[in-house]
Image (cartoon, rainbow, N blue to C red; front, side):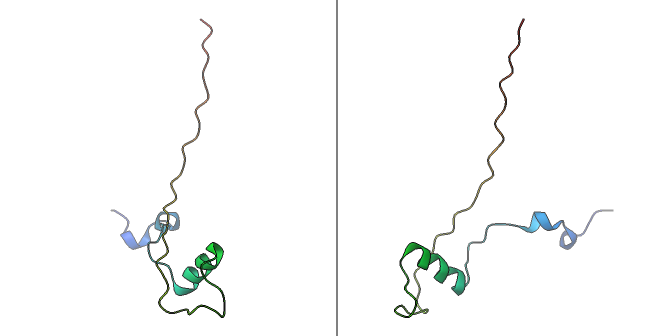
Length: 67
């Protein structure tokens, strides 16, 4: 019997999102210096690029064979 897809492990559900909420977009634009609190409107915000984070593989140790 297989496990239903809604009962998958929580770690499998973590993905990079391609849509940010308004609060997240404002925070990212403020970090970049493109949004000033009070001076800028929270409506009509520019798009914010979301970078997908890739896991790096572990570096393999060099194996030295003394033959």
